[in-house]
Image (tube, rainbow over all chains, first blue to last red):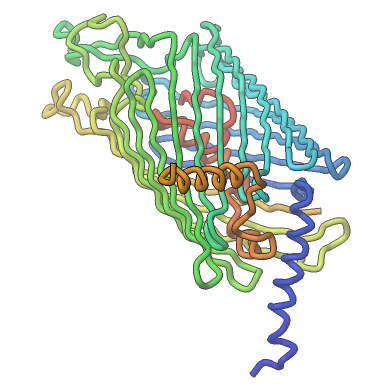
Length: 393
Length: 75
């Protein structure tokens, strides 16, 4: 049986938290300084991608913070449509990000630059965002703009001896409006709206269309993809987070997507977060995604250059996928150590099952019972593994 | 005119309300649950950006769920 003073502790903590919150509402504050070490591995569809990353975030003053991160991922193997052209992939992507954040009263300004380099692809993104707390801090409105310029190349050599031909450029502009709203003591809701416009060389040079060719012993031949030079997409996501009667949270979200290539996508996600005694946080999630195909996509065209625009990129095919994932976070150093106030270690594992509804597995060609267009539909499973440590100081 | 009075009165009340500051219906001292780390939209930005990048490399949809980093995801 707990003593009277022990029973008062949660109440006192609540009052203290409330007083701190009252103080916090006087002006916006920047998040804690932190350093993260991150490792990831994606395995699926014949590909293995490992990623390593480090992130450091430091407040220079109470109003001004800097953040830098470095990410490197290494690709080995190749996806099904790359394999169907008998080329093996071994590649590496290095991404550097620098962010400056400034808070003044209820407004947070963020400027960021991302540079990503692969041997056959270079990308630079500049972004600016503004976050404003309003109406007694019940509402947070964020506006963001990002401009990306890409240089697209193709490796005509081998995985080990690359010969890169630079094919052209692509650019995109992204506009975001996000609104987060406290509705009750236990419920917060959000709406995210995004528009992206692309222009330039948008086709993936490593993927090909195929068309019926009776002169070819396979029954089909491959040709170059031709994409439109422009694309505009719109996405709207609504989400809600509810604090359950016991200490746990449930999050639900739905996203609707459509673009000028006639792709319509729907995403549903549910997430359950359950802490155990301020040391462990357990999280489980499920996600379902479905899309139809782009209007210039076909698994098998009737003849070469049948249409002005043609694609057989699996990302543009009709598909659905299911994700089931679990995450465990362990909090340690509760009393701090040297310059660190606290730390967490996180393990996150997801399993994704991809089903393609009009993209066929042409690796099966050669088995007598399959003629072009009758191959089995492609499907594969992927495992995404993440482990990372965060130190707060 | 008598019939219009209630409508005018209601209009005046509404206009007065619109000009005053909106009072938060969830007071700052009632937000302890919302301040719990389990209620954060995104606890680990580095992980979210990585997952978004994977999804955008394999799905036609994009946007409205956080930043996804750069690169083509060609393979």
